[in-house]
Image (tube, rainbow, N blue to C red):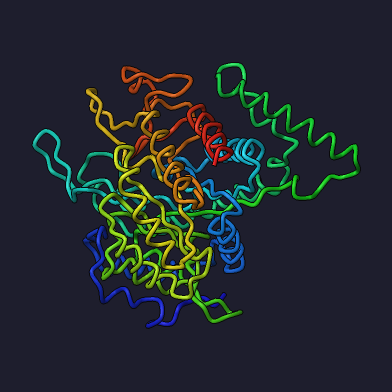
Length: 448
């Protein structure tokens, strides 16, 4: 990897309108932070991005399933071994459920090590007559509602880099150092099996996996693939100064890669075809996602393909659809039909979280687990009717025992939300709800 992009290759987005960017009060401080970031080592390598693109190609062709999940917005004070292990443990458990119960290879991608920025519907927030800039994630400003905390600070971009590096270091240690060994399926659940119906259901499946592994060992087979797990990082490419500073020229090919994460996606609020975000990701070779909300037209979807996947390469482009449970069955079929008819092979993934948020009487933003599940059901129904592949799920989750979404097998009620409502932005599924979802998705996939 060469240290810097050439000035014109990685920065063509600067001439275009860029939505959702912070207004830094000190441009010189921003320039200094960017210059520092440009000198930092890559967080991921181009070859790893190529491996994920190949895995996503299998998803697009109907040969694998994507499990993508993690925090709504990571926090700098959440970079601890416990927090990271709990998130990873939940994803490993979900992956085991999907792989074994649905008999499908699962590509595991975390919303992790870079998801420190959030688009917001309003630039300011008013409380008790005081108006301040809105909180845009730890990469931009502070969560506390004070004038000092809410000022965008470019030094936070460097803190995001270091937090992401620490997180990736620990994730790599967990996934290759024995923790992710499939023979650990019971160990991932020890703290959970007694207290949760989904934990007990998982334990029964873990015993089946154990028996299968014992049978294979007795037959003289003990593949190395069971001892580690392939795990990739992803985040929304929101702050273009940061993403551009971490874009590098691959010395093998001369291509540009955003080495802040293996996969990046463009959100619903920044997917303007003539905007800076689409221009930026059009120049990099990472696998790319685009969030598609209920207003997306088939014509727009085809234009995204022309801009971002002109070679029609399976694995390059993922459409992450976030319609809402009440709209998915009406809006998705036309998109899938027209894109399929065009000959493009994209990965179709459902984000059942973002279209199903509402405000409880207590003032907490929340989601009903039944709505999340219904959107996933609608996604599968559409693909089954069209004979196309439901490629995966993209969910906001945590490995902690939070009370942020209502419902689930270990039911959380609206009156429970205040007990452990810890998210900085959007409500996340807790570990029990995440496992419930994995079992239900496995059943849907088997029924395709």
